Length: 234
Image 1 (cartoon, one colour):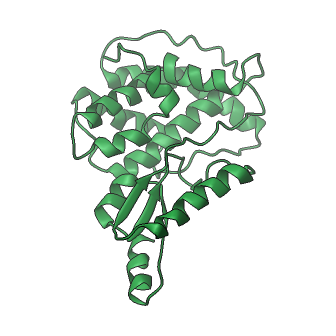
Image 2: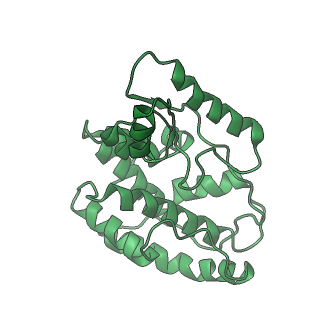
């Protein structure tokens, strides 16, 4: 869509757009673009929230008021949390683990995989996992390899899609059994009790240490999680 904007602008048609991958938009430099920190496939935020979606569209249209471009503006608000039909009560004890990141993530996956399968069965096979082309085992293995080597993932497009898949996999596993938790507690459990949450926090710190990649750090953690992130990520 960024490239298409150039052709339309040459024909005298002003364009604006919404970006879900800031890194790519910054490289392509379309005439006008609004970056949002929403999951892939949801450029306007959560479904059925007309007021929130209209605000996002309005912010994108306001870019027409800029005197010159290219313009890349960050939308300052995260999407509201989506309510979940079944609350999390996955009976997994997320104890702090030691060893390599590959081992830590693999061990945690072994704990939650049965609950993901239970949830999948209850939903008659329906899942929101699938943004990337990789299986969850490969995703977490590659995350672990990069963290153990303390390096930024090379394929950022794959990395963003895989982050969405990993988070979705965990949330669907955590919500497999009914319980007393609400949606906010589910997200808190993901970000503050799991090795995946700590791993993404460490990735965030690694990206922030590289000025040319710092912008990508914004997609790794919601602002609320970043404010309360565990200070013992290593």
